[in-house]
Length: 538
Image (cartoon, rainbow, N blue to C red):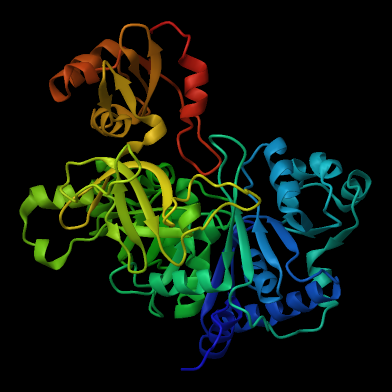
């Protein structure tokens, strides 16, 4: 067999050769700008030439600080295709964490949207390795004079960089070379870096084209609402290019009305987002033609049943749960009804819909008990730590010498508590750190949140454990309600009592105007613990 390297450049060349006529649409500056894969490929080659002219050493880190746009897509291919390492920065991180990961990754160049420079300029003087700033003009933000005065680095315009460059081939021929580095959200400490090789990206991309995964194909129009800084938009930019799907990029405006309009106008067939974003978008689809939609996916946290039901009502398809992490290069498991279970009735359908699905081809999973040794049975009852391994699962964190998240036999410890049923469906019970131990018994914050969110007035819920002298820990619920509705804590507790075990009923309920979110759109329980661990009941 021929030893042909699996690289990002190979994906790029396929898109350029076979799908030059297909479109890439970007919502930007109040309009939708449409280009072709062919035009995008020409600019990407010139960008690769510009990177080559910078004289960066092989393997140098190149950071991006940008929304999902065509120009960010150019960088997504040109950087790894040039033998450099793409580092998409999380635009929602606070300045101190941004500075930490830029310095930790030792980024040498930053490409940044002009509209985001207000967040980046104040920390530039703290960055020890960065030697140049490239500004992507997206229509708003500080002017060139202000940037020149403020920036301690040489500044160049993105379009000028491309205009002055000669096009080159994307010629990386070693699939083991690092292609991207993505950092975790840092909810339990400093963000940690995960390096993905060209081979990793290629294999994960192929998994997304499989019929029993999400089946991206040339007939699709793909809208990645997940940002590129989050595991390369869950790999969808690479998958769309490999398959030749039309691609729709939302830009910076992720408001419900803006996304709904984009989905209707561009006839989107497939999209992904976190539940908090779907909760804003799905209600806006009621009066729009979304008949083209074949699948919408949600991941990052548990999907409330009301969102699944609403998606089914509006599109004719349920909201599909996917499970994965930055450490698994995004997709690792997906909810689908296996053929032999297709006639299992409403109860079986609900069971499957509430699960995180089965591991996709290429990923192995297991659950391990508290002793960290014995693998637990797939009986749907035994709960242990979910562990996984596969060709796109991390082997460790960047710059960490001793990594306790990798077992001695090479499995990645996810930190999730889960059960697996006999058919392979993963049921997450909670994050291990979020489980609440009360009087020697475990309470799943995830399951309690899911039940609370069934109350007709509750829009979102988060359950945390707070110290208790008698019981060790007790649950506290924090909720938000739908606009125009109210709920009293005592009313919610009375409604909840018949539905859960007595010791699961929260000691406190806090009705908030909003729940704090992490940089990737998940509810930030760390902030809630800081806020309520010493507060008195409401």
